[in-house]
Length: 124
Image 1: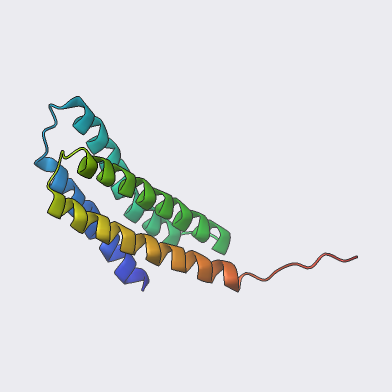
Image 2 (image 1 turned 60 degrees about the horizontal axis):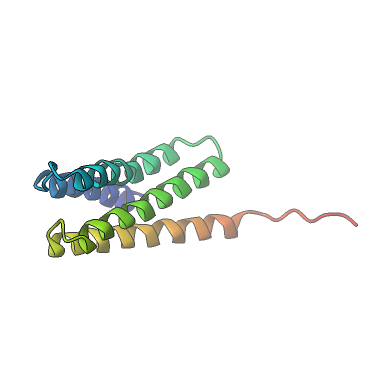
């Protein structure tokens, strides 16, 4: 699953970069959104890669949390482009769907990690 997630995040970044390459960057609002979208969408995969080199389960979970936050941010920027009608709706929907699926995978991984952590009971 980790490989599938890592690979999907990688291709999401590539497809997002290709998607924004055809947008009208002379429009100031589009340029600002595109910069943010590129930053957040490429951050997803980068944090997944960083998680693999984590020194502890806590570190691993933190990197996955950052990846999830970046995925959620990417969804925001994609929805803005879509609702402002600044990009192709079909391509935007495809990217949004993939970003949602990656978010779900990250969320499921985080739930599994938190369920596997032992709880420490306080002594009375």
